Amino acid sequence: MDTPEPLLKIRDLHVGYGKKPILRGASYDVVPGECLTLLGANGSGKSTSMNAICGFVRPSAGSVLFDGQETAGLPPHRIFALGIAQVSQARDLFPDLTVEDNLRLGAMRRGGKELTQTLAHIYDRFPRLKERRKQATRTLSGGEQQMVAIGRALMSRPRLLLLDEPSGGLSPQFCEEIARIIDTLKEDGVTMLMVEQNLNLAFRAADRFIVLRDGEVVDGGDVRAMAGDHDAIVRNIYL
Amino acid sequence: MLMQLTLGGLSQGMIYALIALSLTVVYRSTTVVNFGHGDFVMAGAFLSYVLVVLAGVAFLPAAALAMIAMFVLGVMFNRGLIRPIRGGPHIGLALMCIAAGYLLRGIARMVWGREVLPMPPVFDMAPIFVGDLVITGDAVFIIGTVLVLLLLFFGLMALTDLGKMVQAVYQSPRGARLIGLNVDRFNDFSWGVGAALGALGGILVAPVSLLHPDLGASFLIKGFAAMTLGGFGSLGGAVLGGVLLGIAEQYAGAYLDTALIEITAYVVIVAVLFIRPQGLFGRKAVVKV
Image (cartoon, chains in turn cyan, brown):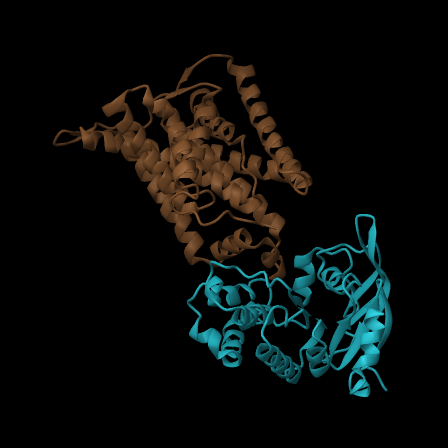
């Protein structure tokens, strides 16, 4: 297959917390317009990958190239300004601020010029958020909070969207809703890198997957080519 | 009599409110309780004294200069001494604050020893009589200045993008990083604002009281009492707590015993912690990760 120039190029990435190494030489690419899923057991380095890309942890070695620019070692706000936004597992919303404030704040450092249009677009996509725009986010349900978290990240018009466990703690119906959201994001041309424990969602939404084990990439491929053979992947992840 | 006491308490309470608010600004940004804050208040008072009495600057520009200097000191303190040890245990942060406070106090003692310095009166205005009530220029000036400042502060926080960003940093530092804010810089800013507001407390009391290097200690306790009463970590609660404390002191002093003025703050702290530990406006403890 003829692959376009990757948007994100990770090469030989090493990250550790204290003396404990988590990522040990992981290398992978994210190409424009795709949704890539990181799979792997707990502690295999999925979330650490995300945090290293965003600058929340500093890699001890290796390189993270975003659109040709080295971002390893940059502080989070500089990386965000380049167009990488993360929807974190804990969502990290601002509980006492309204839905609309949470969303608007997403565009303070990037995407400010298009703030009004992006906000209207997000309200179109999530009508429930429009209904609740004057409510403090702490009063929302988990699913609604997840919409705010995704919407807030989209407010910056990211070139790469990182989704850390978007289905985490949500009901099965909402997982389906997340899958639909990811579909529409793909139609809009948003490039995504996702960590997801829910394999149904992971395979339903992603184009490609890679498997991390002990901080290294051990497997990967096209999701469609693997259709119906999830067992092999599960074995590869956990055994 | 009651009105007179209330006015006196309000004027004193506005100072406590300012100090409690400035402590809260620092606390909300970095979860550090600045045990050296009383000495920041003292430093503000002494800076304005030096500028007015020794350098002959007029009071208002002197106050502005002292606040700017304290803003810079607050930023430098956070950058140089707090930020590098923030990952460590809280006791280390507390001790760092105490050490910095004693350093400021030590400098003031080196220069002025145990002297008690009178600041020339600034608000030289004939008192206004409303019936029995005597409204002094000091009271008008203190209450007026703090009211304007509070309106400005809460207006900025609630209505501007900058204020919303500050609230975002307070409510979730990690969330603030996720939207691309430079959280370290916001924290520096909060320390600067906290130091400057605390210093203004000192600047405002300087003309109505005597200056001495140890004056910060009692203001620190008043600030803590106001914060506890209002709800630890609540900005609005800090202000209300300060005002209520000021008025309570006056009532207790007049109707019970003058000795009580000095210990009202301690009584308030103990009583609130027993009866309603979250204070008037507090929710459950603010947990930050």
